[in-house]
Amino acid sequence: MTAAERQSEVACSVEVDLANHMEFVLASAGLLVPERVRRIRIRGEVDSRVARLVIPESVARQLGLECSSIAQVRYADGHTADRAIAKLVHLMYGGRDGVFSAIVEPDRQSTLIGAIVLEDLDLLVDRAVQRLVPRDPKQIISEIE
Image (cartoon, rainbow, N blue to C red; front, side):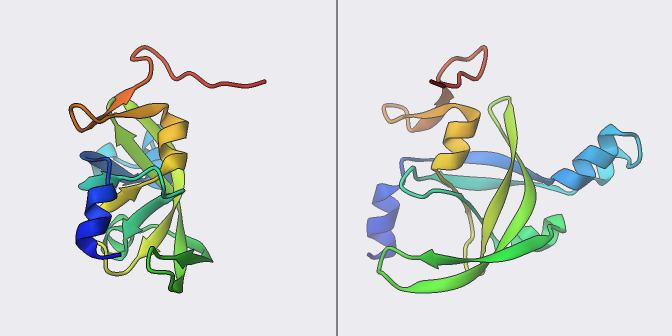
């Protein structure tokens, strides 16, 4: 699949804030000045066919994220590669936030937001206006049986 074909599969593109969650916790406990929490605003491409959060390697370095393990990833053209998994990535969008692990991709320029993030933050793609919206603006809804 070419980059142009891949782009056509992206549901929408949004700006998200990413931060080092460990520093976020330290700042909340008063052990770190909040301004010292490493954070970045970056374009996020939303693709629900992708399972996880994927971040550029440069962002993982900028945020000082610890990599915990390796995952094998399979690309649309069928080839595979081993990639590091960064842990404790704090993602904020639209007044909602969550902590995720992320695949670290060496050559990416943007973040890739997959189904796990969408599900956890209870966000839906509004294709008419090409943006993410909460299913219920007041609260996250979780379905259980």
